[in-house]
Length: 489
Image 1: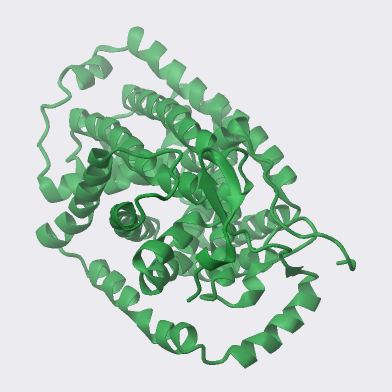
Image 2: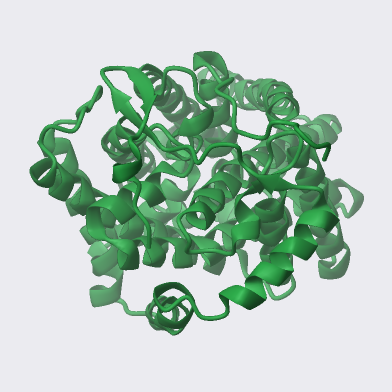
């Protein structure tokens, strides 16, 4: 990096690209793998399954609109982390960071494996894809995305726009074809919908598990809050993008699920490792490769968006002193490249011993714990700082509704049907104490980390940002915080 060059985040993402980012991260792996999970925990009941997909859309909209207040009040990169630290204190903020350090790479690993499976499936017709080639391809894809992110925001937004156009074309084809097949359909296909609720009805714990599977397909709606420091007019664009994107996504998801069920029976969906590919093999076998390509572009855009947004969150945690300072450095393209590299290293490790459904369980479980904490922090800040400027202020019933849903999704599976992974998650969360007190609270090892930081700055050609991104919102505009409001660990 040359002497005198400026390094800081730029506000270059507007309403169109903000909506594209939401499409990119939401419409990814979920719609192609989660139908199996939703059907399984719905006791193969078609009516209950479709109802859960619709209910997941309502829940996601409710949570996303409540969550949007964080990014409009504090329009800065990594706004969730900063909000939790300001409202609930550094320990809760570290809990959020600690779970994110591993749950996000776990989600990246799950989608990387799914993407590799879809790409390789046409080369292994009628049989399972071998594990070793699939894992090698997944690793290669993740590190290629890391290189793309290191090139900066313009390259990322261009890639997201192209890949979103491809995925919408594929999903549109599946949706329209399903409707045509229903209109001209065979009697057995129509009977599947006429007797949609005739199968067994799932109990409360199964419904909660089905919700976790369906909500995984809608996950990612908080991405704009994470990248609020690079959004134009965040107080206006975040709510607008959320409403636009989630409404269209809900419509697409319902149509795609109807299309799947118009061609495949619930048991056939359960036995398929790649539902969209199996669907195309039944409808137009010669175009199976095209669906694999379209699905792959869908998942890779979601992966790319996750890498882009999470690196901003880790960047902010580093600025606040809870991660090594090297993670808050930027390269010449204004990318926190050290944070990207750390994330991909963690994801690569998780790819080696993998179980896709278990990873989805883990990610969904921790995400709803974190969202519940954010709603508690939102209520606390409403009373602690009533005069804080809030250009967008969500209604309290939305906040309480989101909290209730979070409690239901977290507690019901634990109480009704406890699993061993619940214990693992709790132990993992508590293990954060072993790192928080020595390395964050008492700041041990800072001298050692400083030496590593100097070496890595030279190796990666990065430098600290020119400003610390201390922003608050004032009636729809963005201005810098006075130094007194900046919080430290």
